[in-house]
Structures are given as structure tokens and as C-alpha cells.
Length: 73
Image 1 (tube, one colour):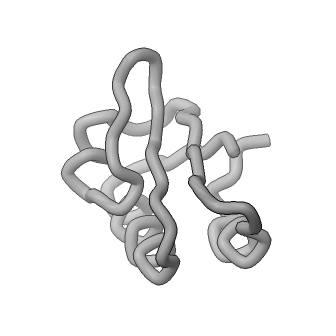
Image 2: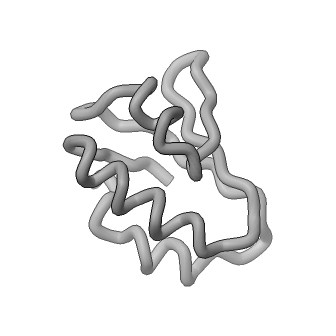
């Protein structure tokens, strides 16, 4: 999934949403890969650009619905 976060407030909300799920997730931007549940990792990647969310689970429909407002078009 492609994600876009506009600033620190959205990053905090995003982390609070993904922390509820038991599976591992990474955010990737170029060669940088960080834990999607880490606010410091997201701050490292920066804002106002599209990053890729990799979810290591068979089914993640509930997660997709929960973070729908952050999905890039």
C-alpha cells in the first residue's frame, strides 16, 4: 500500500492505528526501511511524499480500512 503523511500529528495517529495489529509492518522510501509502528522511524522518513507500507500478513483488510485516510491515490 502507498501511504502519505502530511506531518507529525498524522504520523502519531497513523502509529496509534497500526499498533493495534499483531503483524509486522515496514515503511519503505527508496533504500530506507523503518518499522511502521515506530514514530521515530516515520519522522526519519519525513513527510509530504509517498512511502510504501509492507504488511507481513495474509489478510489485512481491517488494517486497510483503519488507515484508509492515509492511503495515497
